[in-house]
Image 1 (cartoon, one colour):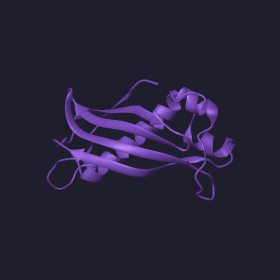
Image 2 (cartoon, helix red, strand yellow):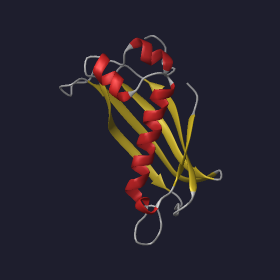
Image 3 (cartoon, helix red, strand yellow):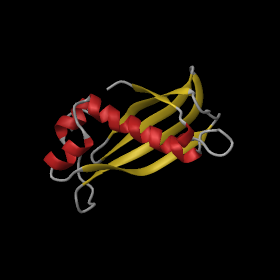
Length: 135
């Protein structure tokens, strides 16, 4: 799986009193990027939960670095790249750019859990589509 790119327009609701994007808004933008990369390989989050015994991806750890602000009306691009697919988790590199300029970078580890919150292996078919091989 290569990188996934998604363009988002910044709206008033994404900003704080200064007119800059509120820091927590970037978390929502990156969540959309992670959801869309799954959709691109043919797995919707809701479908995964319904058809794969209640499995879901949850964020286990995130390291985020805010470099530059975005402002209302900007068009930003959220780039998501699967860096490593393991047994029950996946490491993703994400960045938010405006006109090729890095605004925010993040490393996100997501884990697969069942309906009871217990870690589960990523199903082999999904692992392969994400670039992690059959193992």
